[in-house]
Amino acid sequence: MAYGGDFFAVEATYTLDNGNTMAVQLSYESGRKSLKLDGVLNRQLSSLVSMVKVIYLAPDDVQLVNGSPRLRRQYFDMAISQLFPEYLVTLRQYLHVVDQRNALLKQDFSSAQKAVWDQRFAEKLCEVYAFRKRYLEIFNTAFRESYANISESFLGLRVEYRSLLKDAFGADEERVLAALDEIKGREKTWQRTLVGSHLDDYSFRFGEHSLRAFASGGQKRMAVIILKLVQAALVQELTNIHPVMLFDDIFAELDTEHSHRIRELCGKRFQSIIASPKADIRDIFIDYPVISPGAE
Image 1: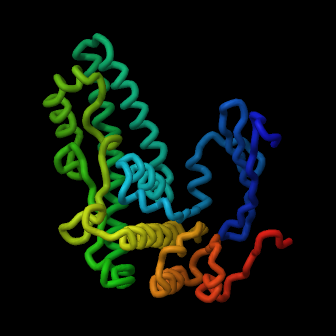
Image 2 (image 1 turned 90 degrees about the horizontal axis):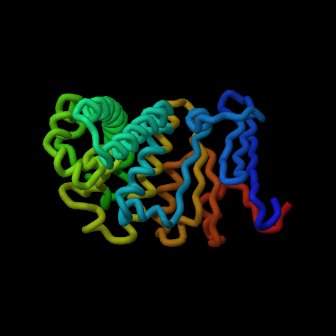
Image 3 (image 1 turned 180 degrees about the vertical axis):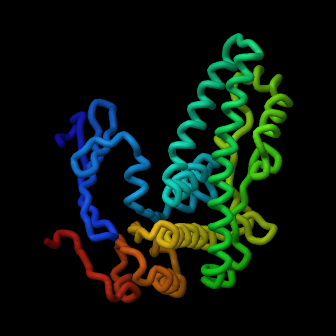
């Protein structure tokens, strides 16, 4: 690709757990992205997500705690799709319904038109909630059973779901429709959908306390690392695919004890690639080959 050009492509060869290899190409040209698997154009991202599981860790991950609800939704949407690739299709359908419903609310409409889109919205929203509920149940159980002993500082850590819809995970289509009826005046005024999974949030908790409000910067960083280690373990256990872990300079602000604990939790279950300017990281990941800048 030439600097300033309108095309680029990234290619990689990925070895699957069954020993077969797969060529992956992601490209961008004239404002359009495309995915090719073994040279064949594929329009479904879920096809790649179902086979290649990559988990990326970076210092900016602390924004999963401190940042906006949108960042947390994006993270958990991808984490859920790694276990259940069909979730991406469901989520895409739901967001399409939200877009169509919002367009309707911006114009004059009949009660019959609104009823059609309300019903579709309720159906897809309940499907999204079913996936999110299942993932959080699996995640919180895995943490309690396998990762709670990483440090006494993290006993009681869990993720809760926060929704504008009361008891969202227990809601059925009828209750969603009732909620829409209650806010129909506000929705007409604001001309957009005011409830649903596209507005919901996830909360990291220490017992009854919010991690965002009560934890130190170091505790937040470590909590997010734990989050992703649990994600990796679930991918391996539930899909039988070994994920690739990409550690991008996350050890710079961790003490030696926690760095060693992360090494123990990774074990040999995952392929781990670590980028770090600290030479002493080699003393922790002592059996890992070293690739230095400029090395052939």
